[in-house]
Length: 247
Image (cartoon, rainbow, N blue to C red; front, side, top):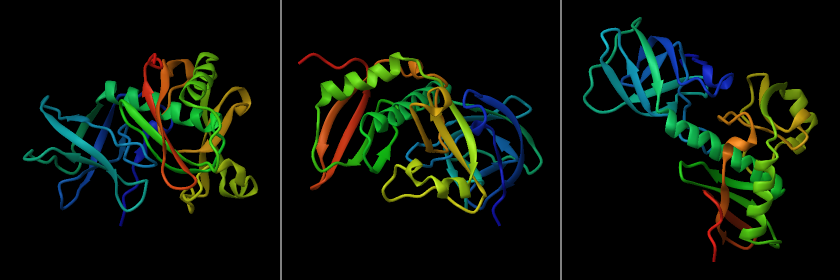
């Protein structure tokens, strides 16, 4: 039976360290705490890495964070050949903040791209240096330069980024909030987390469980490195940090 973990990152993506108590260690050595600031791989965003600090100061290196039987069960995967903690042991979680912050900036940039390109999303992957978003686009308007300029306009406007919760019934009544063509938000929990950009979500609002910055200016310089045609109506946009390189 899955163990529910309090996901501290859902309320504060900037929390890089927190205390937790070991509630279980699974048969593969995965460590489950009662609460954690570590994000588990989901929705195209990779899970956090870092370490768990024991009371004696020793560290358990964490190479990945994944979901268990559902998204509420968060499992910290230790690197090989480390002594496991005991159930009931108190640990302090430390995420690799530099890596997480890059992912937060990138994930926010992906949301901004869906504003610039308002087409059904067919796939996405968030990375530390490059991310991709795939869209169902029959005919492509614009190029790397024009899309990059539109992205930077949204970044520079420094729109606030926030989250809110709505009921599953509210989501069903507003199907346009779902931008993904093939993937629906997980149901059954009774509520859905929205990521909103702009005052009163004036720029964008969509279901997402990932981590993001709190204002678009934090994304920094961003550009489209490549636009690829993947099938008759599928276009892949590759987002990269830094200004658009001169031709």
